[in-house]
Length: 73
Length: 72
Image (cartoon, rainbow over all chains, first blue to last red):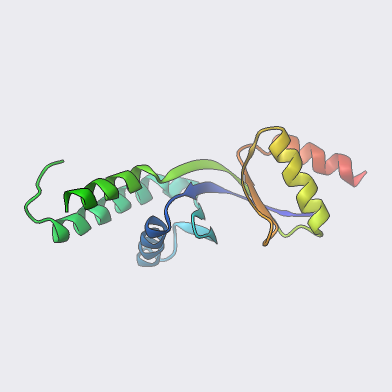
């Protein structure tokens, strides 16, 4: 009999996936359940909104460093 | 730099997510393949990986019935 695990499937670019893995490591590995392949992850259903927020934050930080003059958004 | 920003924005939007169930650790490839094909047929399959014998579905009820009927 197979094992069945409830969760949310994330489909994204490899670059985004590696950022998600970093965010997961910084949050006591409480977000990601399983690393599926280069573009897919299984995460806890309850963590999707936290992850979205943290990812947006991380991408904005990256933009500030790369484009300090751009203040739109 | 502006192009890079657009790229990043596109990539955040590209993070698709779907709630559901991951199936793994099947007893045989045949069992895995049969069930993944059935999941695709009924339109609940989102992702499969033949190398690891795992797949992800959005709904599980019909697959439970399928497993039960195969056990008999």
